[in-house]
Length: 171
Image 1 (cartoon, helix red, strand yellow):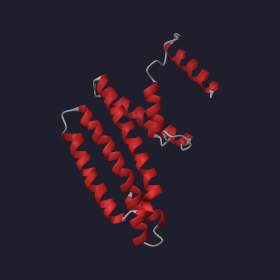
Image 2 (tube, one colour; image 1 turned 60 degrees about the horizontal axis):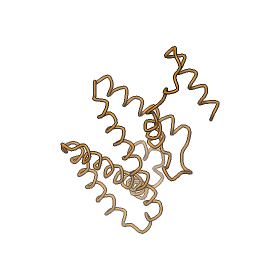
Image 3 (cartoon, one colour; image 1 turned 180 degrees about the vertical axis):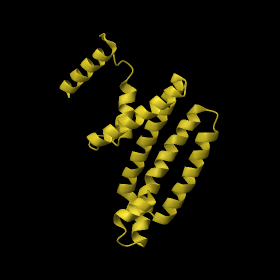
Image 4 (tube, helix red, strand yellow; image 1 turned 90 degrees about the vertical axis):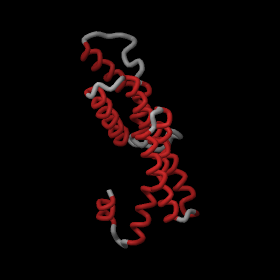
């Protein structure tokens, strides 16, 4: 890890043709959000290098797009925080679903998650307050984390032997 950090620092210094001790200051939240969006659990023990790479690419594309659209820098932090909150809530709900999923009525739970998704979409898009929009991101992440595996479980029970075709159809 340390070798990769040294190489990254050398490449960044070469790119801007100077060196400073303050390079990378303020990147902590971006790095943490990319790793969390890539699927790494905040509790530890879960995560892959490929997931982290996908998270880095996703957050980089979103950040670049907002910069090209001339979005205010502080709103970029809000969007980044919303994405990270979504990912954390989704991971938490998937963990809860894994622990207590067999005790739930799956159809009612999925219908409740769908209603919660619709509510969170309305809250995100119609709220004039950024904090409420962030709360909507968390609610959406929590409900999607339950709805997604629940929909696959229902689909797999209805279409026996669906396998990859079922996944492709539902994705």
